[in-house]
Picture (cartoon, rainbow over the protein chains, first blue to last red):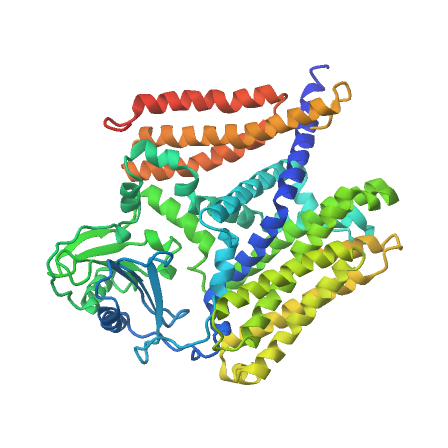
Length: 533
Length: 101
């Protein structure tokens, strides 16, 4: 090897190694990543989806003033949870105008959860009576817990996230001509080339977002993933949690009863301290006891930084004295809070939220096209013989089941929400069961009808999506004919998004239906998964 | 990561498996050691040092995993993960706060 040639040879070797790493790091958990990306994308509209799934809740109104809402929450909690160790109150916001209450049940019965959650209608002070559903929360939770028990789902999601991060880094190194590639799209060339170009455009277009969302996803679970960092400096992980999230710090209470001051006054004082900033969350430790502490945290959507790291004030709940003030303004906290806040996107106002949604959808499609590329590349390389290869058939069926099948399952989830009787026992569990049954059947279909799986599953998902607004009209009085004139953009937005998704899926199904025999047909068929939603 | 025509396929597969293990477990050891070492050495408030250490540890992990597949042999990959991990663990040991196990 001459010295002039060595660096180049080294470079080519590196690119080859990175290409290998990119291919396999992307494939191994690609199906999990696709599901995480798609449900996570939808979760940017978590409260809006929940609202659509509970059509009984009134259309959004301006939120009740925070101090007044806090007093309302206190009245309810004092009556229903006087012995709770802690109360958590989420004050009404424009996106979630209901009062969200959560309290710690002192001694839960075995098998019962230690926390009880209630939603109050601020207008009446009563619990919101709507059909039982997990709504957008299901998509949000599935995105990082994969409906597995704690902590397994979170670990699997985090490992998938690490694979994603490695796939992104190795993908960048593989592409020496990253900017030139960005302007290259050759759908007419077909096969592997078209897939590669589509994958590149989707990846490079949103590269900063993809890197940010993947890295920040890991950071959210850093305490679980890297306990070594904490145990290196702390005896007790709880002490770290208390330092990190002073709003939630656990305190000791005296045994004797002492009346809690009205929560509204703490909210008013906090908002005065923040000079117009809004209070978002109240945590009351040991309500009704001596030593009660009231923490008021600032509304998360007012800053990029993550809500649990938002500035907060701690008051003595009995005397009203200010105990501590946390502005969460050290460089490390601002950095960590911003990284996590960027992932959650709670700060994003409507337009930016839609941009988040669009780029995140491009990320979903990046994973989807990457999976399809794996198949297209090998099929093209090996010609007709490859059609028979077990690994190709397996990956192709898994792709169809996880990409098109998930779209079917999501549509079925929304259908179940409208079709299951509102008073059914265990209703919300049946909704998610319908989701998983539909997904499972889609996988079975993918393995049973390999030749038809892509067009059939995509057409089914398209039909179910397109019919959602019709189903909504048939079962509620808040269909497009009502919501559009009324300017009810939550209900109308969901219906319109369902129509748009249905249209996109129908187009993909149409592309996938082309006969396979033609040379140009294979890419078209495979392109079906280009934009899964 | 193409099979070396001189070596057998089984040997190649073992080398790949070894690298995967080096990346996942060696990389995790390196990330944990990084987090522990920086958590005690960074000149910041304790909670800030821990958070900064964990943020940086993820970057080290990701770059470490990538490097494992870029380096020439699986042995070097293991060495590149565990060597620095041991050094960082010793540094953590030297700098750990009194009273901690």
